[in-house]
Amino acid sequence: MFKVAILISGNGSNLQAIIDKVKSGALEIKIDLVLSDKVDAYGLKRAKAAGIQTCLLVKEQTWSRQDYDVKLKEALIPKALDLIVLSGFMRILGDEFVGAFRQKIINIHPSLLPKYPGLDTYRKALANKDKEHGCSVHFVTEELDLGPIIGQKCIPVYKDDDENSLRQRTQEAEHGFYWQIIKQLADKKQRA
Ligand code: GAR
Image: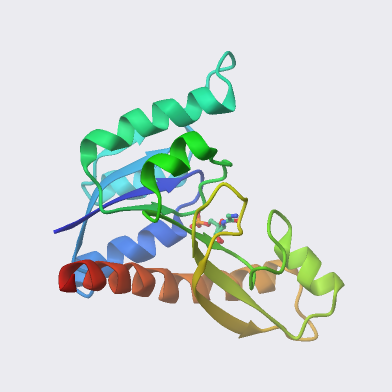
């Protein structure tokens, strides 16, 4: 079975969408671990409710960013994962971590990359009067939100959209999209 860890920092709505697809049988993977860097991430509750092992790895004040990456790497290496899925994991990962799992880490980002890497993508799309927005799934490299794109989903931006409505429509698109990319990668591994 294709073994996956899902890394979160918050609500975990994308995590939930993936869990639901696994439960329905549409996505044949094992979610081996859900790891959060935030103690109050609601996604941890979602994972526990689904019977998935969870891990909390909060950065201590004395740790550098690289120290965190080392701890994260140490937590994940023994799992022998096929894929690490960043799902609203709001930490920048350095080469210590990325180098250990090259081509095995994917991220979903709420914009049509390379447009709007980083934060505030909805505000930027609205300020620029974009006609379309969307989400991108990409391999994670040392450059924030700029690794090779695996797939993108476009959505329209309406005249009366505000940040909330645009976020909601984008996240709905994410929920129907991220699991399909994971399935694509799992199927590819099985064929190899
Ligand atoms: C998602 O919309 C995801 O695209 C975004 O965080 C949200 C997490 O929501 N990720 C990033 O901005 C990464 N740069 P969720 O916790 O409800 O899945």
